Image (cartoon, rainbow, N blue to C red; front, side, top):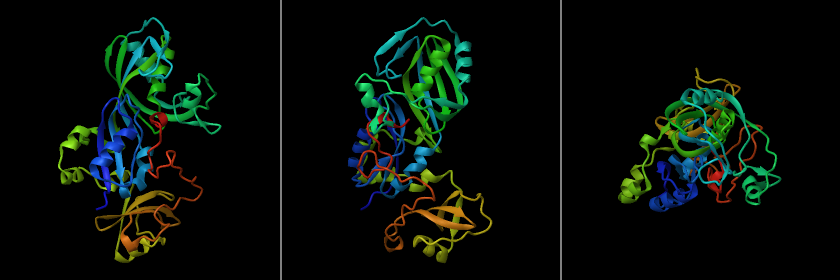
Length: 331
């Protein structure tokens, strides 16, 4: 029986995202699997695991805003920006909680971050971590990200605990080191826990140990439907005739009125059944991703790109969206 859906996993410290996915995939007996946003091995918390048809919507999880609990240790900078690296500088910490909060506040809003060397972003076809392991540092272009909020939770010098809400692509390691440099004492990320990915919460997640203790049918019951990844998209419901056309990859006039502007993506249903995702173009619904429904979804329709959209790549070569390797690739 095909395994389709989203498992909200509470990843433990010390296990890679790829390793966590492999264990859950084995427990569920799933063939097609991926994850919706990598966590470094030292990080814990919410890791959305996608199975079967849900893997078609990995990009929605990757693009979602995220919330983290982070512990930042001042006075020690490391070569990786986190606790897994080697110390490269030690400086005296002369700030108090108010000074730390003021420094952190300077990074709220649209900011530019230079990606860390220990990441899988590529330069001249090689991931940055290859250069880092060889002791080389290469120039990296800054990237614009948005930090929505940094909430101070605790101060126990030289450590500060904060909650960070941010856009996709934000490196919390880089945020920690940048705050340390602004304070003049350096810093590194000493602990990280992801609380939210879009509308998904770690409060609804399960650990691998708890999953393993369940009977097979109970494990299946832990899977949320694929549209759990699409909660942020406006919804449109089609009648039977419209659903049939949509499932054959045909664009159709959008029902009126629609709560979405031109170019918006929408989740499309027939009654309570998810059919896929469409794009609103010229008052028409253009199918972009379809849920396979046997003869209803012809080959080549399930992953139709938007106009001008770049081709999607599978960095791991596994056919599993959202499953880059190694784990330092996506924050």
